[in-house]
Length: 248
Image (cartoon, rainbow, N blue to C red; front, top):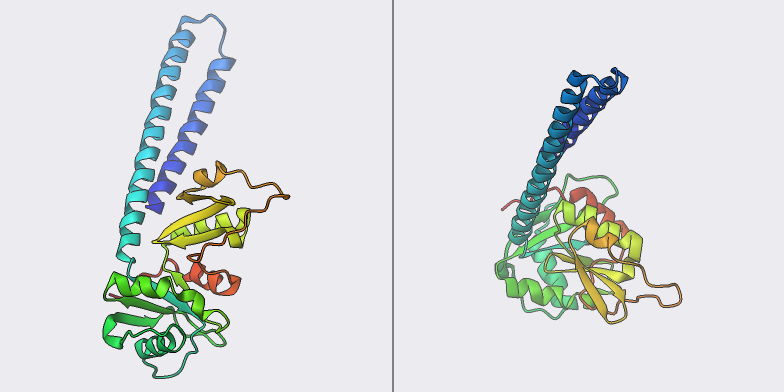
């Protein structure tokens, strides 16, 4: 999809350059020439047609990109990422996560409730990779997600497995503009707290551009318990790993 967007952008640049050349030739021609007048009229019609075609094509590409992103996010709805879980050789990641949940969340989940889990990315020195966990049932995933505040102080952070566009282009941009505490995710969607009592779901930079930050005298502090990861360090790892698809 990104290659299609790039092709459209390149096509637009080529057409713009060529039309500028034609326009320059027309401007240099002798005024009043019937031939020039005819060419100028044809040129204007051609330019209008090309620009409308490119605009329509761009809209279609954006629509398809949104649909693909939604389908990809839906396939991740049972997945959570666990950051800060100590890594050991020959470990059973499912057992490690279940033990963690039983200790701190008083969970009754067993390894049978996890369909698959693994570390993300290649092993790297002095780097603890996050654990991707796919639960068998969405209710088990939600129980963990809405109880994750019990992990505060353990060094373990739980986050949703957002697609790369949602994480890099929307979530990170929202954090930079509105502050970490005013941005969170839920069910794969990105939400921002504009002001006290007002939250908005944002899915694009255009949505962010339409939001005016609250005045400095009235900071928008989020009290949502469902807020996403607030630590910057694990979030940067997710950014690098967002494009990695889970092994299913």
